[in-house]
Every structure is written in C-alpha cells, then in structure tokens.
Image (tube, rainbow, N blue to C red; front, side, top):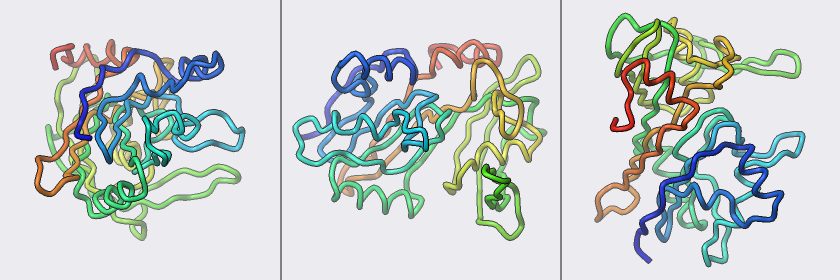
Length: 248
C-alpha cells in the first residue's frame, strides 16, 4: 500500500476524544490523521492529551492506538513524544520494522521538526541559535528542567515570524530532542511561551506551542515525507495579533 490522502482533522481537544471514547465511538484519533502509508502514521495530537498514561490512569494517545491498526495485526507505536500540552504532528510506526527505522531517523537527527510558539516579549535578534545544555532536577515529588553547564547538549534555532501586543510568533527548529527543550530555552532567552505555567505564566487558552511540521526521509529512493498540522482554534486569536492568517 502506498501513501494515502487523509482528511483535515476536525477541531477539538483531549476532552472531545475522551467523550468520544466513552460514547463507544471507534477510533477517536482516526479523525485526526494527517498522513498514512505502509509504515507511518502522523496524527494531529490535541493539546491536553498525554502520549503515555499517567499515574491516575487517564486516557492517553496509547489508549487509542489499537484502533489505528487499519487492518494490520500489529498495533502502531510512538516514534517520538510531545508534551501533554503541545499540539500538532506526532509520528507513529505501524509495526516493529517501521519503529526501528523511525527510531534511527530521530536518534540521528535526520527528522526535520518545526514548531510554532507565541512568546512573551520579542528576542533581540530576528533569528538565532540557542545553545544551552539542559538537566532535569527533582523538587520533592515533582521535577523540571533547567539550564546546566554540565547537562546534555541542547540546541534550538529560532526565527521571528511576526509580533504584536508585546508578543512574538516564532518558528522553532530543535536540533536536539531534550525534554522541555523549547520551553526552557525560550524562558532562558527572556521570552517564555505564553501559557507555560512551569517556566512562565499560565494562560486560560493554554500553552501556545504547536508542532507544525515534520519532514521524514523514511524511504531512501523517494522524496522525504512532509506533513503539516493546522493551527488549533484555541491558538488562533493570539497568533492573529502577530500576523498569522488562515492562509499562512
């Protein structure tokens, strides 16, 4: 089977998925499929849905994976992860072979990842590179990530796409994949992401961080697969103040 065209995901978040699952509707994540071929699925993950189940046992992306077999015997698996409150492109391998190939691509840094973020303030330069090592620190039963000279290498490239009302719309291209990397790097730059309760300030509209695009060179003799996730409705009003439009 070759690649297949898929429908634009319907608007809705984690609460809508939970309601759909409770009502007995099959495969609530299937309506958020962005790309599908014999090895790969790419989902538009809604903000508020964790990729792994937490201590409370609430629903996560993994809860819905069995409904995404589409005739295959194996259940697809996560090729990487996104934070609970980050929306956008999430890649899944459809079988063990696919997960091995995708795992190599991600670990070798060959997957091009592009995020959009709305931040408080504006960087001094319109584009640049943030090169700050990161380490996880434990605070009682909780943890967070901090800049630490002895930590793991972490590199993020950024570009200002627009600004307005004391905020900036950034394109982010992480060159490494550390936990909370984008959130900590932008906070260290003096421009925390809007709605980041851990490294900045909470906002009723949530964390303004969106995994916009993935480019995956999965098949050596074919062009790389490029997939984009539409901007969630909850993030659109704030991005519009910085120049975003539906044609962007």
